[in-house]
Image (cartoon, rainbow, N blue to C red; front, side, top):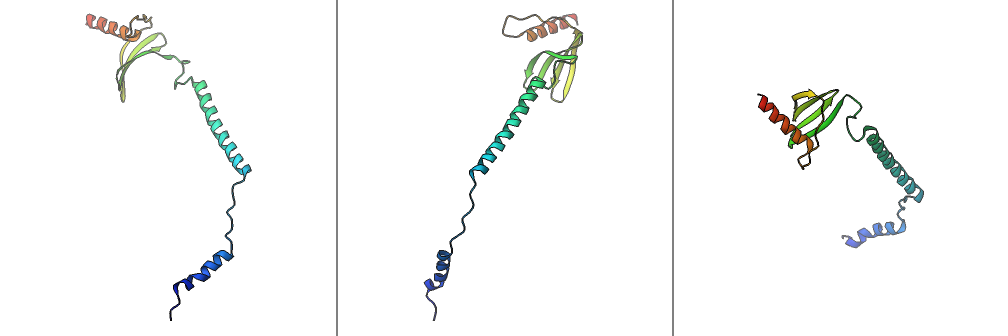
Length: 137
Protein backbone atom coordinates (compact mmCIF):
# COMPACT_ATOMS: atom_id res chain seq x y z
CA UNK A 1 0.00 0.00 0.00
CA UNK A 2 1.14 3.50 -0.75
CA UNK A 3 1.70 6.01 1.98
CA UNK A 4 -0.53 9.05 2.03
CA UNK A 5 1.13 12.05 0.37
CA UNK A 6 1.01 14.28 3.49
CA UNK A 7 2.78 11.66 5.55
CA UNK A 8 5.88 11.99 3.36
CA UNK A 9 6.30 15.66 4.24
CA UNK A 10 5.54 15.42 7.95
CA UNK A 11 9.16 14.67 9.04
CA UNK A 12 10.40 17.62 6.98
CA UNK A 13 7.90 19.99 8.54
CA UNK A 14 8.79 18.77 12.06
CA UNK A 15 12.54 19.19 11.50
CA UNK A 16 12.13 22.80 10.35
CA UNK A 17 10.08 23.82 13.35
CA UNK A 18 12.23 21.92 15.80
CA UNK A 19 15.59 23.47 14.79
CA UNK A 20 15.47 27.27 14.47
CA UNK A 21 17.37 28.79 11.58
CA UNK A 22 20.55 30.62 12.56
CA UNK A 23 20.23 34.40 12.38
CA UNK A 24 22.31 36.25 9.85
CA UNK A 25 24.71 38.65 11.53
CA UNK A 26 23.80 42.31 10.99
CA UNK A 27 26.07 45.25 10.36
CA UNK A 28 26.92 47.07 13.53
CA UNK A 29 26.57 50.84 13.81
CA UNK A 30 30.33 51.19 14.29
CA UNK A 31 31.11 49.32 11.06
CA UNK A 32 28.51 51.37 9.19
CA UNK A 33 30.00 54.67 10.46
CA UNK A 34 33.51 53.48 9.58
CA UNK A 35 32.36 52.76 6.02
CA UNK A 36 30.70 56.19 5.69
CA UNK A 37 33.78 58.00 7.02
CA UNK A 38 36.06 56.11 4.61
CA UNK A 39 33.77 57.02 1.70
CA UNK A 40 33.72 60.68 2.78
CA UNK A 41 37.53 60.67 3.03
CA UNK A 42 37.91 59.26 -0.50
CA UNK A 43 35.46 61.78 -1.99
CA UNK A 44 37.23 64.59 -0.10
CA UNK A 45 40.62 63.52 -1.49
CA UNK A 46 39.19 63.52 -5.04
CA UNK A 47 37.67 66.99 -4.62
CA UNK A 48 40.90 68.36 -3.09
CA UNK A 49 42.97 66.88 -5.92
CA UNK A 50 40.70 68.42 -8.56
CA UNK A 51 40.85 71.80 -6.80
CA UNK A 52 44.65 71.73 -6.56
CA UNK A 53 45.00 70.67 -10.20
CA UNK A 54 42.79 73.55 -11.29
CA UNK A 55 44.70 76.04 -9.12
CA UNK A 56 48.12 74.90 -10.36
CA UNK A 57 47.18 74.76 -14.05
CA UNK A 58 44.80 77.71 -14.02
CA UNK A 59 42.15 75.44 -15.55
CA UNK A 60 44.13 75.14 -18.79
CA UNK A 61 46.50 72.65 -20.29
CA UNK A 62 49.17 75.28 -21.04
CA UNK A 63 50.01 78.16 -18.76
CA UNK A 64 50.97 81.66 -19.86
CA UNK A 65 54.49 81.29 -18.45
CA UNK A 66 56.12 80.17 -21.71
CA UNK A 67 56.88 82.11 -24.88
CA UNK A 68 53.61 81.05 -26.54
CA UNK A 69 50.32 82.87 -25.83
CA UNK A 70 46.91 82.69 -27.50
CA UNK A 71 45.83 86.23 -28.37
CA UNK A 72 42.50 85.40 -29.97
CA UNK A 73 40.56 82.92 -32.03
CA UNK A 74 37.65 82.62 -34.40
CA UNK A 75 35.44 79.58 -34.96
CA UNK A 76 34.88 79.05 -38.68
CA UNK A 77 32.83 75.87 -38.19
CA UNK A 78 32.50 73.30 -35.40
CA UNK A 79 35.67 71.61 -36.66
CA UNK A 80 37.66 74.58 -38.05
CA UNK A 81 39.28 77.51 -36.24
CA UNK A 82 41.61 80.39 -36.92
CA UNK A 83 43.84 81.31 -33.98
CA UNK A 84 46.21 84.22 -33.41
CA UNK A 85 49.31 83.14 -31.45
CA UNK A 86 51.95 85.36 -29.92
CA UNK A 87 55.43 83.83 -30.04
CA UNK A 88 57.97 86.22 -28.54
CA UNK A 89 57.68 89.44 -30.55
CA UNK A 90 55.86 87.80 -33.50
CA UNK A 91 52.22 87.06 -34.18
CA UNK A 92 51.35 83.90 -36.07
CA UNK A 93 47.89 83.30 -37.57
CA UNK A 94 47.21 79.56 -37.83
CA UNK A 95 44.32 77.58 -39.26
CA UNK A 96 43.29 74.52 -37.27
CA UNK A 97 41.31 71.64 -38.81
CA UNK A 98 41.05 68.05 -37.58
CA UNK A 99 44.46 66.44 -37.90
CA UNK A 100 46.22 69.51 -39.31
CA UNK A 101 47.52 72.96 -38.31
CA UNK A 102 48.75 75.39 -41.00
CA UNK A 103 50.43 78.76 -40.69
CA UNK A 104 48.36 81.34 -42.56
CA UNK A 105 50.31 84.52 -41.83
CA UNK A 106 53.17 85.87 -39.67
CA UNK A 107 53.73 89.50 -38.67
CA UNK A 108 55.44 91.58 -35.99
CA UNK A 109 53.63 91.92 -32.67
CA UNK A 110 51.08 94.74 -32.69
CA UNK A 111 47.92 95.98 -31.06
CA UNK A 112 44.45 94.70 -31.82
CA UNK A 113 41.89 97.51 -31.94
CA UNK A 114 38.87 96.93 -29.74
CA UNK A 115 35.74 96.68 -31.88
CA UNK A 116 32.63 98.46 -30.64
CA UNK A 117 30.26 96.06 -32.40
CA UNK A 118 29.29 92.54 -31.40
CA UNK A 119 31.58 91.01 -34.08
CA UNK A 120 34.59 91.00 -31.75
CA UNK A 121 38.06 92.48 -32.10
CA UNK A 122 39.81 89.51 -33.66
CA UNK A 123 37.17 88.94 -36.34
CA UNK A 124 37.29 92.55 -37.45
CA UNK A 125 41.09 92.56 -37.42
CA UNK A 126 41.22 89.35 -39.46
CA UNK A 127 38.82 90.84 -42.03
CA UNK A 128 41.00 93.94 -42.38
CA UNK A 129 44.16 91.84 -42.75
CA UNK A 130 42.52 89.67 -45.42
CA UNK A 131 41.35 92.72 -47.38
CA UNK A 132 44.79 94.33 -47.13
CA UNK A 133 46.47 91.12 -48.31
CA UNK A 134 44.05 90.76 -51.27
CA UNK A 135 44.71 94.40 -52.32
CA UNK A 136 48.49 93.84 -52.41
CA UNK A 137 48.22 90.71 -54.61
